[in-house]
Image 1 (spheres, rainbow, N blue to C red):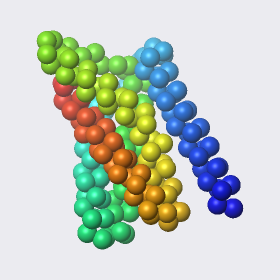
Image 2: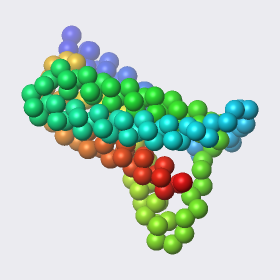
Image 3: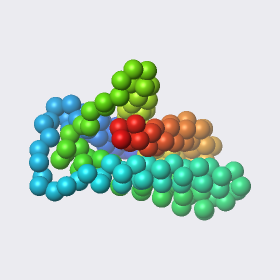
Length: 172
């Protein structure tokens, strides 16, 4: 039973994660932006706030589990996931309507920006399957394996959330 359930989860995780990457690739690299008739200029600030919220909740979740407060940790991590999920919806809506925002900085700061952006994008690709797997292991009460994976998932997720805020400010 466990093996079939695990296999079903890993297939689900691979399909969802691949679909998300393909969709975002299409949205950002292939599709032309179209006007939706609404001013969504406020969305980048909302999205940065959601990333900052996720980062804060992640740190609080880490502190909670280190203090043995498993229930608080669970709520904080689910809340961080919710903040990241709402961010993703807002990100898709904004980029569907407006496309990319070009970076206008010059000189050394341009190199810094693109280094941060590239690492942010690459890590965001692996983040979703890592988060889903970490949540799955916790739900299955495989806490030793959950903890081993979370040691990679948490810093990756935190980095992506924090660099998302940094990118927002660098674009402004």
